[in-house]
Image (tube, rainbow over all chains, first blue to last red):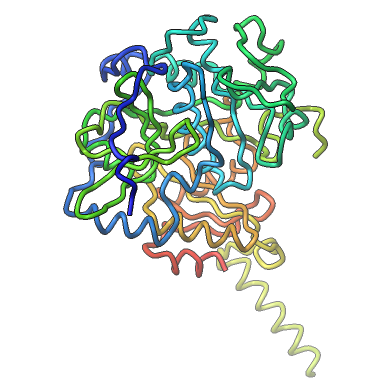
Length: 276
Length: 124
């Protein structure tokens, strides 16, 4: 039984600066979700059961929660989840999981402005154009990705951890020199718009992570569930918690369909310092 | 006499193999599969849950598994080296395709099966 307090939360502004419009997403490089990808409502229950059976919904391909705490970075924490799920799905699970820095995306798309949030269209465009910068920390532990990648940054400016070698707010000029060389290996190649609630449910039922937003908060939706006869969209919120939205709050966002694929998944950024 | 007959039989067998147009490769016999790839055209097809279920099972048994669009590229715009042959074979077969590889070499390519167990069987 899901705690009712976790359903349809009212958010206060924490970083979604503008409503998401499909035409803006299309202009920035997304494509319309093909009509063949819509799944009829009569098939939803079977699909939900299949995902449960096969552990195939997008949450199975997300390696972590993030915690934006006192920041306005929600758009980029949600984007980070969508990218992570798409990347791990292509590579067959969490064996080659990479953690990325939402802060590194946020400061680039705001041009170094800390407060006031960002737009989903800008985050999507930046993922397509220049890509994601890895986090210091990774699935192998604190700072584990510093050895793996030449360029890393901390997760968020909203909080700090005592082991982080960098912390607090950073402007784009504070990013590690040459970061583009690493980020280019983590770019979105194909993005689809999610114009309405049917598209939202269909994408979740295809195992894709849907990013949308409301009340000034951007959200990465992971899977469709059914409880007490109603469908809920389960999302991995950037506050270390799974939460749920009912149908009235679905739609209006994007999914990442494919991302760059490394030559060698154990050295995805082609770091010459790593021996084969 | 027996030795002569054996020699003739071996000779005839070689002729059958060579003239029969068989795609015979020692790699197919000696190489152990290590990677399973599902290749598709992303605007036409999204692998359904049973495909992911099969890949999950194969991954848990030590296989590297990949699921990707035929036009996938690396961060520098190249076709991933380890998957180049898989993509070529999959496109030749028709998409979506299941490709079994050993050290980047294609051991087997076929249409993507319709059930989880058929995928597992096709790989083993």
